[in-house]
Length: 294
Image (cartoon, rainbow, N blue to C red; front, top):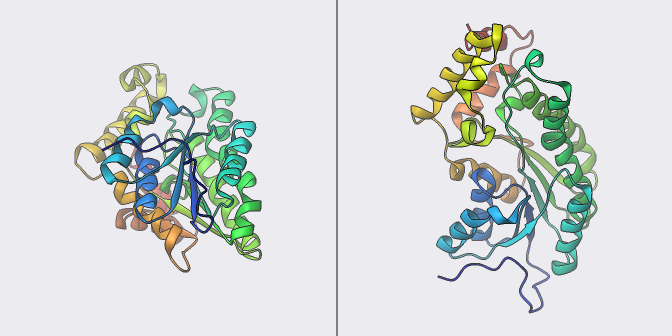
């Protein structure tokens, strides 16, 4: 089967076809969501910072027998974001949905990293979401569209050695929860997707030499080793969700008549976030996460 095109066809596009732009589609949930959306009949614009890493996406699209328009978009580069969104409008005349999926994992704690490190995490995982959402909103207003953001259960419950990452995801959740009623007055639906552990994400996306990080952790080494052993076991025991499974929640937000604001991707994620959402004084959450490091 031939490789799907990476640019729009030269014939005039169907102006009535719903168009979705998805960020961070080189792997994981973003890749799975792009394929699922294309299968469901959406004109799918799959973006990534480096189009040279689109091989897995091309293969998945070819295997599924769908066409996906692959384009460059770097969420921290406002010019790149504007060019990508304006290119979609120029080529297709409409934008019906955006899925903010691009992000980066991070492992660390305040005494062992710089504040600049934390700012970098916020830049990708929080301000990158804002860059894309701001550029897209005028076009989503025009179509009564949907703004969907993949956050994390770490956007509800703070997790040890994930302070910066969880802070960024908390920020996204708070921002979108605040934006949702405002956007709804203009016909735009806002949702957040909360995955738990997803296969390949923890070690591969963080890109760390974990043993070296533990060796350099000084007084935090014992707690960090305990946390890493506990977290890695989630994957080795086969309890991590597949990207395709998590992408089903994205499709729910994309296609449901009245999608919820907050959608977890699994029963485990629902149970986990439920701990926080019913924990008025914070004791249950800290009692749980304290066992992860001691």
